[in-house]
Length: 390
Image 1: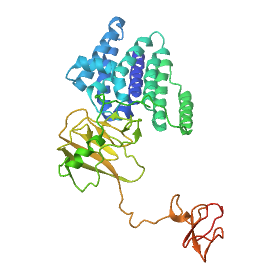
Image 2 (image 1 turned 90 degrees about the vertical axis):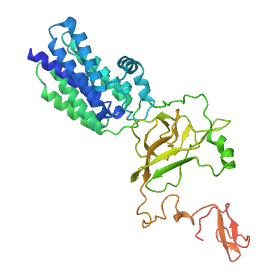
Image 3 (image 1 turned 60 degrees about the vertical axis):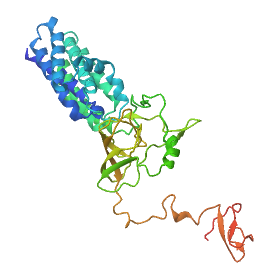
Image 4 (image 1 turned 45 degrees about the vertical axis):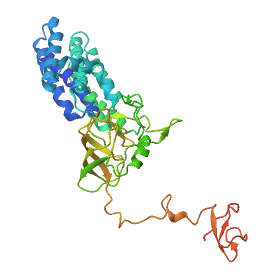
């Protein structure tokens, strides 16, 4: 009897580990409470009804859904459940990660974990080896969303190995687990390329069929230069407020590209240098949208649910907004005034006298590169093909 309880507990633990692998997508903090609230009552009912197979699956599902509802408290539980089961997986792909902790989005992972645990418990008495397959499917799906780092992957493999050994074997094969863990560590150290993800190439189109370009409004703005478009409150002066980055041409107009996503809880810095967070409250006065004043590397936006281009920082809203708070990343420039200059750096001034083609300074009436007489000061010596120091 106790052996059955331990095997059921191992299945539920493995299912929770598979659900936590969605941490980069939803955030481990927002994801943990609904997972715990779903798994705990479901495990209790599964153990309680372990001898009543006719009621066990239904009772486990009802208990898990009740715990999930208690954790999320959606306004419309049925709608949240339907959206979470049918659309949440796709909506998440069109958002920056971590996504906003909305009930309709968070329902997705606890439902997967609950289904995997229920199927695993039902298969446990018939085919113990197959009972672990639903958990592995959830784990594989999590990696299709966002591949785990090697440390996380090693920990997950160790957890799956331990739980699988408890479920399948009569006793824990510690030697086999040790060999598997060492192999996972070695494989994790092998360098690999960029990981593939389901959201590669996925973007969100604005609800409006056509979005007015900011360039169209320029003549009207120039005609009324004294009209304030927006105002902001910040700790320090902000030099520039980009509205949109139009860097793609479709044959007719310049467009901001097609890399818009729904803004999640935040974005990482867009540069690999020391940065600092800055924030400002922006109040729109004569700017109706859909474009919002932004910065090159936005970190988070409060007061509006916008679309964002993570690579360009463009913000676009589909609803009316009067005020919002923008937080962004800014490179820390303190200390640059006293920093040393490397003239030999690529693109620097160290190679200005070693060009093979260009204008050569004229002295004594002849070019020092090719010896030809030329103008009063400069000579075009692109044909001599020699290097010279002026």
